[in-house]
Length: 346
Image: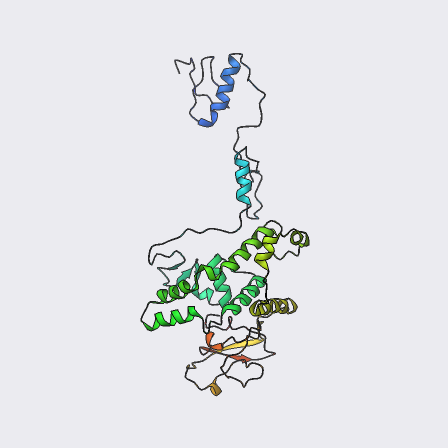
């Protein structure tokens, strides 16, 4: 203070300075102090002032909450090259979760120390049991439950892959289980046999779809926008990834199931139309004593290789979705169900 010839700290409310300088205790006051000292020395800026040095937000999200003006900080465009980097980042779709490679250190599931109830992505298993099997599969991957249309699509995709009879993955998992492997090892054996190469075509098609529609659909993929203009601009490489040279039986069934979902207002049971009745029914109970929605053209309670009434996929065995922990008692017109939805957890 003696060197600068001042006796107080410089603040915007109390600008104490001299031609030699000023003393500040807040780094935010340095620009004002420098401007005052330069003005005291009759020195003009080298260029015209532009903008302000106040706090600016380059990225912000109020999550739909209406904030008061004092808290609702406006978003301003960043200076180059940060503006280009932010624009590139905003075009990314999806989320990347941190990987945890340590054994038995999964961050997906944890047990509440007080209630001793397990949580999956912070959702208690008791709450998760109120959702269908496909909804819980989507939640385990994306950490959020899908809406009605998303559930229908997940149901169709699950039914398309539920029949693993004669597949290498099922044989590998059965062999690992018979040899005493742990449940995680059994699943790992099936995943290792499946491999990334088997899903290479699906991954390529998914990448093409994301690149085509990620910016046109916005937040809601079912907003009903006209996407004909985007489809007209599809190149030969994209068409090769999306189209097959020969008809695919499973792909045809999937498209028919999607079309059926569009025509059906709701494929899930409404409250009061079906009543779930718990009872102790052993797997060894004769088929004639089991109760459940019969399939078309087969006796009531008969368990065999049948098509899923919801999706219409041929040869989907009911053994992949046992229901002997519960029985369905119809009180009105039976709704359509899928093999994927008929699990003890749903």
